[in-house]
Structure formats: C-alpha cells, structure tokens
Amino acid sequence: MRRFLFLFVLLAGLVAAGTVPASAASIRQVTGFGSNPGALQMYEYKPDGLAAGRPVVVALHGCTQNATGYGQGSGWVELAQRAGFTLVLPQQQQVNNISRCFNWFQSADVTRGQGEVESIAQMVRWAVADSGADSRRVYVTGLSAGGGMTAALLATYPDLFAGGAVVAGLPYGCATSVIDAYSCMYPGKDLTPSQWAAKVRAASTYQGPWPTVSIWQGTADYTVAPANQRELVDQWTAVHGTSTTPSTTDTVSGYPHATYRDASGRTAVETYSITGMGHGQPIDPDVQCGRSGAYLLDVNLCTAARMTSTWGL
Image (cartoon, rainbow, N blue to C red; front, side, top):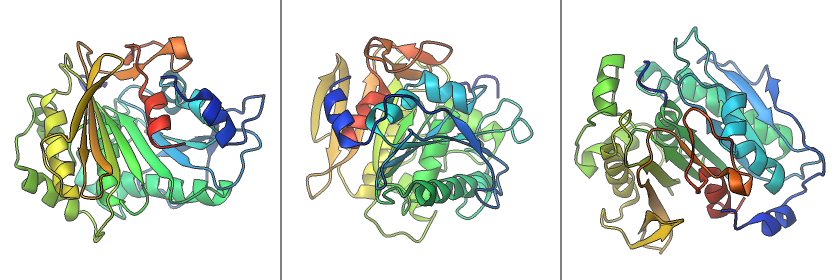
C-alpha cells in the first residue's frame, strides 16, 4: 500500500498534574505482554518516577513509519514526559504488512478478541497493570493506517478507551480487503449515519457510554480523502445519538473546529479541519511538540498537545 503512508497552553498545569522528573526516560521494547495474536511489537515510554493513577495513551504510527520515529516526531513522547503519563507505541512488522501499515481493513485484525486489535488491547492491559495507571483514563490515537486502527479499537474495545483521536483516518468497517481499502481511502464511501453506526455497535456487546472521538483531517489530503472526516462524523455522532449538525463552531490556531455535544452537554465528537494540509500529522515544533519530517507537518497546531489538554492528561 504505497499510497497509504499516511498549543502549548498547558505546560504549567501539566507539570503540576503528574510526577515529571528532570531527566527523560527512554523508549523501550516490551515483550511478553500477552499471546499477541496480531504479531505486533510493543514499545513503551514511561517517565522516570511516574506516580500511580496516571493516564495511558496509545499512539499508532502510519505506513512506512515505526513506533519510535512516530512517538518522537508526533510530539507524544515530549508530552508524556512533560505531563506525566504512560505512552504505548505499538509497531507493525513487515511480515504482517510490507509497508508496515496496521491492517485496519482486514476483518481478522479488526474483530474483537482477534488479530491486531487484540494485541493492542493486551498491550493496554499490560501497561495499566505495570504502571498502576488509571484504567478509566486510557486513550488511543493514530495517523493514517494508525488512524484507521484507532477507529477500529474504539469500535471493538470501547470498554478500554475513554476517548480517541483519528488523524487522517477512516471509519470503522469501511473496507474488508486491500482493494476495498483504496476506494475507501479515495474517494471514500458514502453511507448513512445509521449504517455506519451499525458497524460499530455490531463490533462488541458494549452499551455505553461511548468513547469521545476527535477527528483531524487536512483539506488538501489526496491520500485519504477529506470526505472520510464527514463519514467519521456520521458514524460517531450516530453512535452517540447526537445530531450531525455541529453544536458549536470556532477556530483553533486559525483552523475550523466543530463540536457535537450529547444530551448531557459533553463534547462527544469534534473535528479539526486543517486548511491546506496534505496527508500527515499536525505538529508545532515552535512549542516543543513534534519534529518535522515525512508525514509530520508543521502547521502551527499540534494534535498531541491539543489532545493532552482536551483529555486532561
């Protein structure tokens, strides 16, 4: 899949929120985290001296990327150190996918209890137990293929995640084969909200409350069509039982932002439309959030920083 490569307003509060040491830890590989039916690798970044009861974030790289490069380039490692939380970095292997894409389009890998989603769920359980983390504050995010897998994890394991952020990703259930994946990516598939929601509800026996979903998309993305953002909104607003019309609209760092609130007034779904951005992860090195590179795009807005604030990490 060659084509499918894919605010700093919180520092003082973040430092106060967790036990953040002066010296940085390092990304390390974890083995023996479970039966690992998806044959993935697990990497972890855990700040030295991390207090118990802190959150966990799972960050999923895009195609051709790896766990360490994505964790550092996206800004998530910096934020984990700064805010004080455990960062889980799953890594795809070429034996599973020649381009190291997570297999968001393969039924065997996006079915609860099976394949890659089960491997990542095992990583979450291991990390929560190992660090004494708060199991109610586990979040997942990913870019491109990692974004597609993020949606799959929110659908298949909604009991594990409080929220997720899909960056240049796809709705759950959009494709069931490699060939099907290309038409899903571009130009995208147009289903009704109820049809999309039915795919999520059929993925588990969970009855809610559902994880919150943040959806990030570049308007000039010619790898994953911007139409996928609309379809993700249709899917997750229907799951949450909210209107597909935004509750509020504003701008963040000059980019359109919309929220969709549920009956309790909670923001269940939100979107960020990054005007003029192509396929990649929004970063902002000026506020120590990310490093520019392939599919790591400096747009003066960093997904990792924004979600760290929104999720109250």
